[in-house]
Image (cartoon, rainbow, N blue to C red; front, top):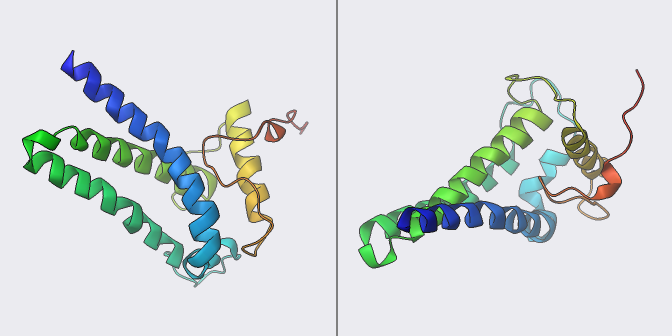
Length: 156
């Protein structure tokens, strides 16, 4: 029974992170830390380098996960925090694979998928990046996509 509780805590943390990421993207990245995120909205030119200032957010999101691991594994009374840390880490891996690998193709590990959900993710993210300023953007989430982005498949 205890293992089911740990699995539930982990999955709840993964799901919660989508909303934490949405909030952080809308109000932090497009707010007071726009100076870190701005280069992510600008076209990249060969020679710009591989990293963006926006990659600093990886560290920002890694800190709570690492703290959960450290506290959860150091203090038996707080052991459940370990599974929140695991959930945050899992979401971080999902975010990396979907955002950096799949959407932005920073790593050419797999080709674009062809299903309604993957096309909706690409449309939503494309809509978000159509605006290069911090204001007037939409679609701040990664996996929860507004139904307006589930359009019909275009004919080739």
